[in-house]
Amino acid sequence: MSAIVSCSTTKKYSSVREQDELLNTRKYIGNLVDYCHTGPEVFGGANLIWIKTTLYNNFGKISVYSKKCEFTPGEKLYLRRTNSTPGVYGEWNYQVENDSSVVYRVSEYRYENNVLARAWF
Image (cartoon, rainbow, N blue to C red):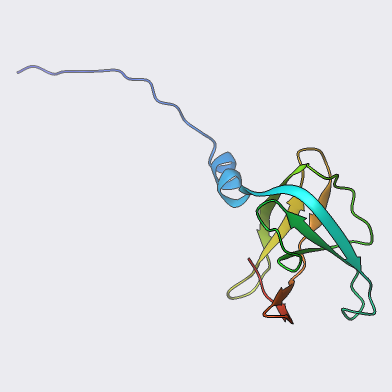
């Protein structure tokens, strides 16, 4: 009777890190082309910045909550899923960010077929 024993190395990753990487993914949404602001009188008290990028080249697809925009034209922008709201089904929260530290929370407002709609990515 003989026994074969082998040794191999394996990499172990922290499950917290793996979960964090799965939950906080970034999607490139283009370079900033332009933006415009709409005041609270238009959308029930919300200041919104409408963002136009090289991939989303029409205003109305991406809006964030803010009075002013600190992104600069040509800057790479990313969409990040951050966390889920509590509840039976929960909803993901999103933010638009650049490579530095400028971050804005994405609003649920969109223009679809020339009508203001509430939708999520």
